Length: 168
Image 1 (tube, rainbow, N blue to C red):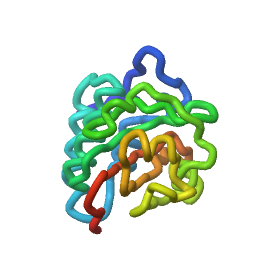
Image 2: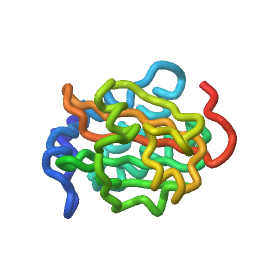
Image 3: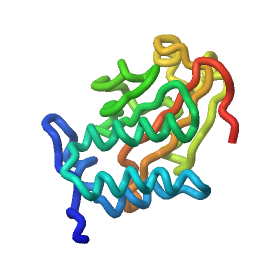
Image 4: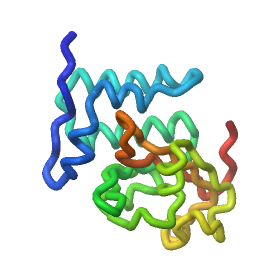
């Protein structure tokens, strides 16, 4: 099967993030150690086999994150200059779709800089977490993972709970 070189851009999307998001790169972003990689690979394959709009593909990713982590909400945001632009949100973070906020001084910025997932099990009062978002969505715990493609940080995936704990 021949795969497309990259996913199609949708109106209003950042060309820098979209040009970097090739199907092969998306496969590598979605590949994670453990049994979850098979579930995430199926989402990636579905994206590669269709002409799904980027926002629809990233919404499917957020849905799978919720299913795998058993969390109450998830969102995907792309880097757009010096801000994150939320392109997908499900569950308790569905209302975040379309929002833009500064990257600086956020848990997302730290995850991008450190190139690893970070967890906050006490988001309220955590200086690394964007408190406006924590209060607005009632976030108790958050897990943020960077999206890195060919060495470039293109965005972040956020999974949240208002109650309970993330157990890994």
